[in-house]
Amino acid sequence: MVPSVPKTFAWLAPRVPEVLVPRRTMARIKPLTRRLPSLRNFSFECRLDAEASQVDFLGTVTPAWGGEELASEVGAAPPERSGPLWDGVRAFCAGWAPEGSPLHAQVPCIWLEFDHDRPEPHEPQPFTTVCVQPDYVHRRLVRGGLPEDHPIRRTVWRSLELLGQGSLEPEVRRALERCFDEIPTGGALLHVAPTYARGTRSIRLVLAMPSRKVWAYLARLGWPGRRADVERMREPFQSSSEVELYLDVADGLLPSVGIGCGLLEPDEPRIPPLFARLIEWGICTPEKRDGVVAWLGEDARVRLPGLRNPSQLLRWATMKLVHRPGRPLEAKAYPEFHVRPAYFD
Image (cartoon, rainbow, N blue to C red; front, side, top):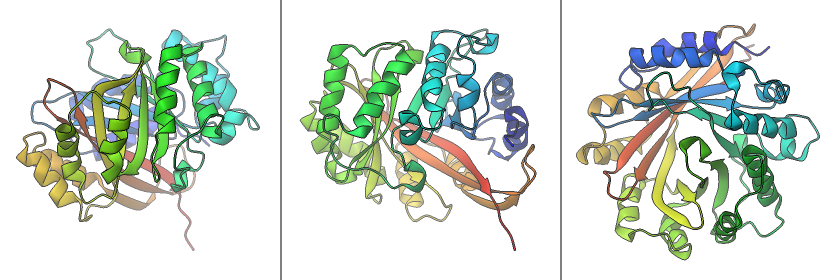
């Protein structure tokens, strides 16, 4: 049984620290949940500095949780999910949800993100991210460069063609190919996302790699930025041997870049030095730090609306720093939950 998104949202909303997602923001997001397909789980994108109020909403879709539903809408889009971006998501799901399809075996999930930075009556459109690591759930990653005709590379091309409903621009494809060729030993391409929902024609890449290799990778690709900016971003994550690297690619690397890591437990030794640096830099408040830490952990036995059996609820957060030229460094947290069956003797 797939639980109702609005009911799960209503159950979870009061449990998210209000300092991260104010109740008035929850109220604004709530109508969106009634217009979405089924979701495996969802999360929030929260800015951590004192003045930031924007919170974006993300939902996870799998073939069984939302994928088949969206695939069935091809040629019959409901009014609440209309437009070319949703058409691209439906086309992707039609090629992904059926068992036995090449994408079904290669893509464990996708994320639909909805930016809430524009006033009503603007209807948020999906910013779609595709996970291209087949065993991402267990963190068994395919690492190293992706040569021509690698299965993951084929997954990338097919996913982007379906989402964009057409071929990539040749110059963008060439720039992406170089990014794939240069992935260092120990690095892994995790996710790809066209940025069309934000009015640009670039592709977002998310990679995992040893922290010490980030600058060398960017330098080989000709990233148009300063090493000092990258090293500053790496500093709060110095106790993490591996980080996630966020790149935007058009006909070459764009100047914006992000670095992040995941937090799982409230007593992780990485937490104090990470937040101490962010607070010292003035890009995170102590209250929002406390909110992130309060979110982390797990509930061994909860009953979610619509599910007959109890579940284990895992709560974690991805931390991310974003560098954009000419703008202050930005800190974000993504509080997320994951539901899995709970079995008891």
